[in-house]
Amino acid sequence: MNRTDRLYALVEELRASAPRRRSARELAELYEVSVRTIERDIGALQQAGVPIYADVGRGGGYTLDKERTLPPVNFTASEAVALAICLGRAGDSLYARAARTALNKILSVMPAADNDAARDLASRIRFHIPKDETAVARPARDAVLEEAMLARRVVRIAYVDRNGIETERDVEPQAFTVADRGWYLLAWCRLRGECRVFRLDRLLRAVPLDEIAPERSWDSLGEPPKEIRTRRLELA
Image (cartoon, rainbow, N blue to C red; front, side, top):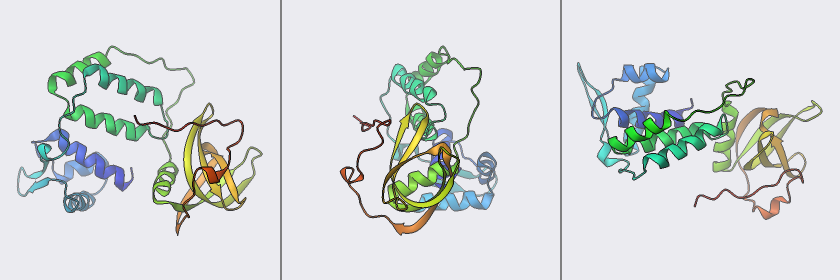
């Protein structure tokens, strides 16, 4: 888990535990880091304005003021379960971890009765597991690409093409797309001087560089390969 994910997870863990206090040692064991790392993370969150309070001494620890963070969300039990079903079908997709965090945020602020109803309804739903399905952890490479895309950073990648030939090139990540064979990265390839599509499962390494990529419009990237059709993700 990278530091950004851990900071979000810490807030949600303290929210779920409030008003009970959690010690730095408990949190360190939960996230498999040192006590000093937790103390630094808590300090960073406090400086960012997150209402986390600390008590010293025996029985002390950290707690979060739930009333000063996310307000109650009026999700029904069915709506929460509908989101959980979408998440369950996402499998090991690129944003599966973020989706799980978002669902936990929703559940943590739902009224107790609706939360219990949602969990009861969810317990009555089962997914079929194919015989050949195995759990696959998303590599840190995906987080590097996502962060580089948001910050418009150039990334140096090592990529293996369909013929097994490995190349190293600098790219400007532009978008993700998903198809039958999995997730792809659409990026401006500086080696080829045009937009190229890279299968994430063939991308061996991704290292962010200090260089900021120029801003490119979607139209300037040209058409993706014919076998890949895309549409924009709509949030509403």
